[in-house]
Picture 1 (cartoon, rainbow, N blue to C red):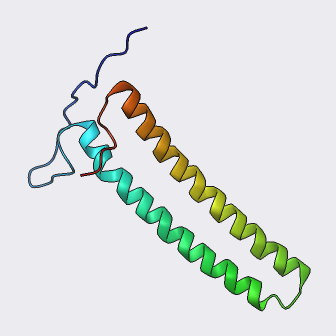
Picture 2: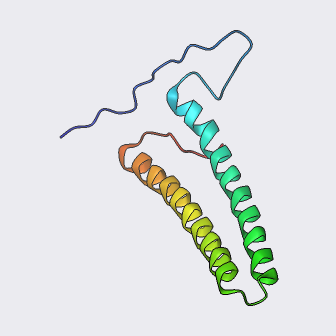
Length: 103
């Protein structure tokens, strides 16, 4: 099966508004780092909240389990987003798409 190389699809933009480029790949290049940055900030906040709740649980098993669960879900969520980014990078390398290239 032969896959076509990245087809340039132009996106209409309002006058005075520029988001990364005129192609879908250019827009994705601009959005992916923002999503990763946002996910990093959310992870940091969730780690701080979970750590605080672990400290103030005072041995209460219910509060301790809630804080541990929040910590685990925050780490799993970040790993999913980080893994999705690397899958995108691997796919773009395999098919030479040039979508997630650092600028």
